[in-house]
Amino acid sequence: MSVSIVTQTCVRPEKAEDFARWQGETSTFIANFPGFIEQRLTPPKPPLQVDWVILQRFSSLDAARAWLVSPERQVRIEGAAPMLVGRDDVHIVQDEAEGIKPSPASVMISTRVLPGKEGEYLTWERKIAAAQSKAPGLQGYRFEPPVPGVQEDFVAILRFDSDANLQAWLDSPVRKKLIEEAAPLTEEFHTRMARTGFDQWFREAAGPGNAPLPVWKMDMLVLLMLYPIVFIWSIFIGAPLLGEKLGMSFAVSLFIGNIVSVGLTGFLVPWVAGRFGWWLNPASAKEALKTHILGAAVILALYAAMVFVFWRFF
Image (cartoon, rainbow, N blue to C red; front, side, top):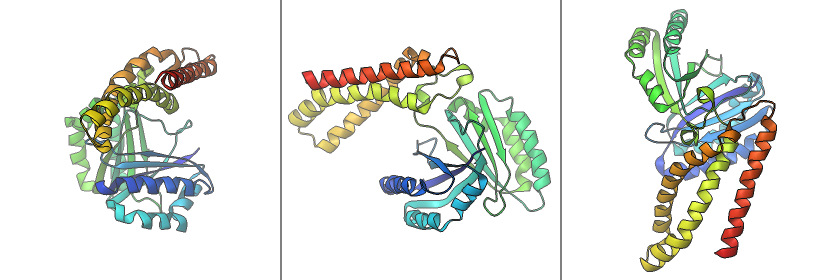
């Protein structure tokens, strides 16, 4: 069973582009490290998520530990230090059999327990786990104890089907009362949100229980809507109206175009996701592979048709 290192870090706003570039270099650097499987990077989504979330999967706990203490990682961290604010939260979690699932709304809770209070804290953890199991929208719950020499905190990861249900549990009187009970047992307590890229646009198309959808399918449908929006805006409004007639600079025109593109994409993607529900959630497990291939072929054909039309007639 694979193991993931989940890092949440706060980046100085003016250093966001530098950090993204640095992380891209790190992705290339870590690719050849023994036991490495994959890396995912989720940028901030203010105001609910202000941190960058980095997930690095390894084939085993030993491989993950080796990366955490490696000289190579230390060199990379030293290079990023001037871009960061405060300390990183770094946690090791054991993946489920099928790997880490994306979720519309997740929260990672790390707790530093006072020495000698570990037994009482575990008793309390079972109590809050029973309470949150009744919370509407809960999709999953993971609890990881400290890893000696690597991670000093207890880590809990909660996945909910929506921001509203997650926030409702975090603000609930039941949870607040339980947190107060744990105060005498804990030294530090951190709660950090983590969200995936486009999930909020696909909630209506999600399967039973809002099961997570394949990221590559969501990406393909977003591109299917984004490309024509950007092209049409640039041809009919951005260049001739904002640029030539109103004399706006390219930077301002592009910024306005991005605002319009994001707004229209957020409106159109849920609509097109509903039309491709048969592909996002195949009805039959036996026909799933055929459905995956057919849906991807249809979208690729639509890509080709749009490119041909825009190239030939514009």
